[in-house]
Amino acid sequence: MLLTRRRDRGSWWSETVHEWALAEAIVKYVGEIVRSRGGSRVKSLVVKLGALQSIDREVLEFALREASKIENIDIEELRFEVEQPLLRCRRCGYEWKLDMDSVPQDLAEAIHFVPEVVHSFFKCPRCGSRDFAVVRGRGLSVERVEVV
Amino acid sequence: MRGADPRLSVLRDRLRGVRRVIAVVSSKGGVGKTLVATSLALAAARRGLRVGLLDTDFTNPTAHIALGADISRTTPREEKGVVPPTIHGVEFMTIAFYSGENPLPLRGEEIDEVFLELLAITRWGELDLLLIDTPPGVSNELLDLLSYVPNVENLVATTPSPLSLNSLRRLLKMMLDAGEKVLGVVANMATGEPHGVAEVCRSFGVDLIGALPLDPEIDLALGNPDKMLSTVFGRAVDRLLEEILRKPRVHA
Image (spheres, each protein chain N blue to C red):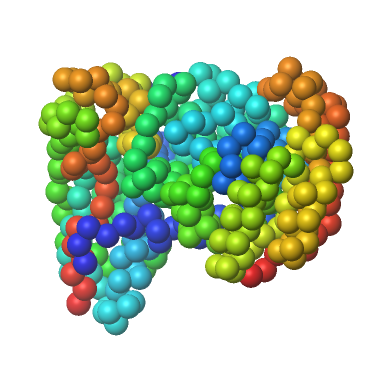
């Protein structure tokens, strides 16, 4: 793998990273909810960030604000809730936390793009199985949308 | 609204610039789906078409080997998502860019996650044709494909073996019952006229689009597009492509 994403954060950085694709998805989704409820704006939007995906919060926030301008959706309050990853082995039942700060950069980058590749790089510390579940903290989801 | 999945909201947008999506499918393993999908992509690129190839065999990706993509040196570029690299004229996306050649066991729901994630972040260019390679079985990858990829046309691969024909019947029944778009059937590893395959196709009213020969040379040519396309198999793939391009898009 040749993932060099976070090596150089030039000025272009926050406008090119793949968080944009996810921000776009969130804004389009929120737009669908606003329309389906016949509302005019979003009073509050709560986005959950599963830490396994190492989403850059500042970049995501910037991208969400920009994307909401493009889609013409007014979001008043934007909040993030970070959830640390918890893994559970499906073979032996062992549970463990994964501290993404301790994960080598190239692996964290691969997991950043597709969190499920965590199975390629981690095994159950007790039995060695790769058949484990990401119980929580996988990635990004919309936790709450309040439309007015 | 709690815990909902926003990725579903952009899938259509991500494929908006793609004129035609063809998935090579088969519930039976070992019939040559990867080779057919990859060779079709290479043949299309050689004809000057703008073509993409997506490997959805997440737990066992191999299209990069057939295509000759060096995943240790090439990765998608980040550009408000990820832009697939162009390999031998083919825009190519595989999970192997991220998992490398490491094992990747996934339970069903995790396969759904990978499918949605890759489709949500991949920014294909303007394409005449996107080919999708699929794993064997009738499970999450194939069901996700049918659920989430609008207007996908299914090219069903089989071999003339009675074991494959049984699988072919089951898959055709499932797809036609549900009104899925079946482009037709390709008989791979044919050693003569594939009468058995033709008979199944007739009974279901679907086209047998072409037959590809069993060609031991192809294994030696993997990863080398010029060599692949000049084998007996490769030339038959080019004729298959011509037939496919001649057919109108399948509508449900």
